Image (cartoon, rainbow, N blue to C red; front, side):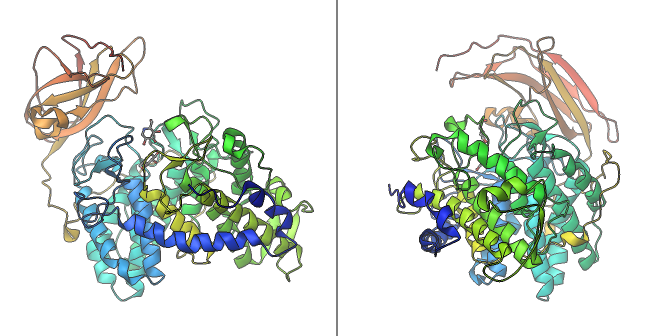
Amino acid sequence: MRFSPSVVGILSIASQALAVPNIQARDVSSFIATQKDIALKGVLDNIGANGSEVTGAGQGIIIASPSKSEPDYFFTWTRDSALTMKMIIDDFIAGNQGLETTINDYIKSQAILQTVTNPSGSLLPAGAGLGEPKFLADGSRFTGAWGRPQRDGPALRAIALITYCNWLIQNGQSQRARSIIWPIISNDLSYVGQYWNSTGFDLWEEVQGSSFFTVQNQHRSLVEGTKLARDLRVTCTGCDQAPQVLCFLQTFWNGKYIVSNINDNAGRTGIDGNSILGPISVFDINAYCDSLTFQPCNSKSLANFKVLIDTMRATYSINKGIPVGQGVAVGRYSEDTYYGGNPWYLITTAAAEFLYDAVAQWRARHVLYVDETSLAFFKELYPDVVVRQYNSGNYNSPFEKMMRAVLAYADSFVAVAQKYTLEDGALAEQYNRDTGVPLSARDLTWSYAAFVTMANARNGQYPPTWNTRQAAAPPATCASTSTPGVYAPATAAGAPNITTTCQVNVVFNVNATTYFGENIYIIGNTTDIGEWVINSAFPLTAGGYTAERPLWSVSAFLAAGENINYKYIRQQNCDQPYVYESQNRTLTMPACGSPAITVEDAWVGPVGTPGTC
Ligand code: NOJ
Ligand code: NOJ
């Protein structure tokens, strides 16, 4: 391992940043120059069918990491894939022509994935399946227990595809955007407009509630969708919800920082890397800093940045002794225990990207307004700062001195990532909080993609604007509204013309007392519930489980009128065998057009025993 610049080297830069040419910055520049190519290659190696690290992955399927055990990340997550594809599309638009095949493969793969019925539901009739967080590498459904649904995926995918469509329009290919890609986007925007106000799991797949990152991206997708629909002369179902989503977004601010998860029971502070990943993914070089979209240059975003970084400085021992105003190792949130709770590469580079973005916005606006909210952020970097308007000026103006201080601060986060990156440039998911040694999934696609977007931001290569200035203002009072979506397979892009057999919503409730670590599934004779194949059984969730009522539940859409044979099974911990109910159950689904039904069952048969592992 290479611990390149010494800690002392990193620490000394802030004091020098304003006065002398920045030696460290030169180091960071050359690191970024070589590492960016490694990162882009790392991404492409993880995309099927030809990616050298992911043999067996379907065409256009973006695998999270080649790691198949501890952890097994050999799946495709809608979120990771969409964020990665946005980077690829932006790089393509900036001139990297070679990426267009990858973009087209992704488009086809997503058209197909949208139609895959999964434990979150199906595309038809109500879009529920679009909230499924991940699929197998060949594009088939994943049936294990998981934090689902996750409602950021459709929004992020829409954002990536809208960016590509805007480019197609500008390059004389509107017809292709309208007939092939819009139907995929339309499904995703329908989902956003219908479910933005329903809780789901956050981007870290742990907290059920409302997530800042999710809502922020949902808003962006609807604003951009509105404009694209106008340009293509099509209708966007769901886009009318944008002002309400923007209204809701404001409620995450608690006066001091962004509370990343609300409407949840996680019992955390809510200080979370979520709140810097959101602002960089909705970054718009043309935005005003007082835009309600929480841009990087926004005072609330900056105040939140300081709170988050102060928390991170106090969380990891590798940050010990690093003073304020200096970049630190940044992870998900201080209470994190996943792999021991460590800093992540993609969040450390996101901190740098956030600051590069903010500087770009101030420079583009030629003005910086320091207010009471952002004052503490600036004080760390430029002690003379006061609350006032700073207009741009010459090299020695306070405005330019502050810009250089923020850029040096940004570089110091890159220097931390650099310090813990091995010689070959491989980026795992995390690096150890005490030793800095890489850990968890190796060659994480998202780590690489995040490096590239950071590098582009530093080099002044910004993604196209998304018209934040045109976003409709939120209503005076927020309301919990929803627009029913319109869903159809995107057949022109390659989706199978899935049958629109009439389905009826059925909720299976079963009382089954379980030990911690035990899961309940339903299995039966129809395709939706696995045709008695154990690996295709359908998971229930324990969200409503209490001491009074040990409730496991799932809501599904099943074919009207069909006869179902089923039973519940227990998945034991420690790789012990499954435990089956001792009887088969029957259910005749009601006729087409019937309202939702609820089946109330209670476990019949042997119970499980916790293993010792
Ligand atoms: C896997 C998820 O991907 C990760 O985010 C989470 O922390 C762990 N499961 C533990 O719940
Ligand atoms: C765990 C992370 O928490 C989640 O955000 C990510 O989607 C998966 N790993 C896959 O990379």
